[in-house]
Image (cartoon, rainbow, N blue to C red; front, side, top):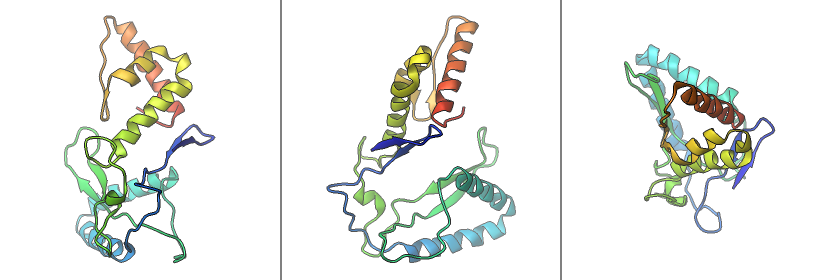
Length: 188
């Protein structure tokens, strides 16, 4: 379920229900329709379009997506609609991209319907993210004992929270976290 690239990044397969055969309907036409709707919205908001295009470029550079030139109908494919959400004045990033795995396909099912819900009835992404961090601690944590402790016990969703009695101790933990996380392709 979890593998690792030569650069240290982790690859996690989506956990499908049952034997992994997916009886999901066609999704391309609806995803394309939603894409065109997003393009129309972006034409009216050029500042959002710039940020959205930066995100897509980064996603492509990181290898998270690739352009499909020729549609191979022999392959089972699910097209995942996505759209930008722009939040003016956000402290981290003004733009986040929402992937809609609950968008129904031609047979009325969606990708989430075919995925195991591994925690609290939600889609598996949060669980898989935490699972990868634990795997990173197991794989590369021997050199970074303070960081391992934080990864195992002091992370909630995407927040890291720990305390230290001395500033030097806090800096040590911060530095270890940065080094360990960067080995897995995560950058604070």
